[in-house]
Length: 70
Image (cartoon, rainbow, N blue to C red; front, side, top):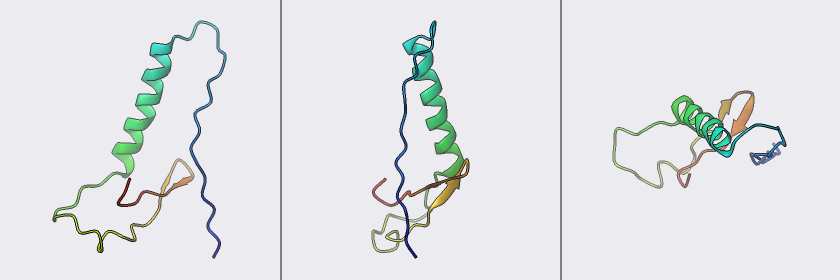
C-alpha cells in the first residue's frame, strides 16, 4: 500500500482589515483544537520500541501522521 505524505500549509491571504493578532489567534485556535482532538498522554513511562508504530489519526477529513517524535 502506497502512503502519501501531505504537509500542512498555512497560506497568508490578503484580507483588508485583518490584523496580525487576529491571524495568530486563529492559528492558535486551530492548533489547540488539533491538540484537544487527537493528542493523548500515556499512563506508563515512555518506551521508544512500544511507541514506534503509532497509527495515523483522521482530523477534519485529513490524515495526520503523529508519531513518537512529534
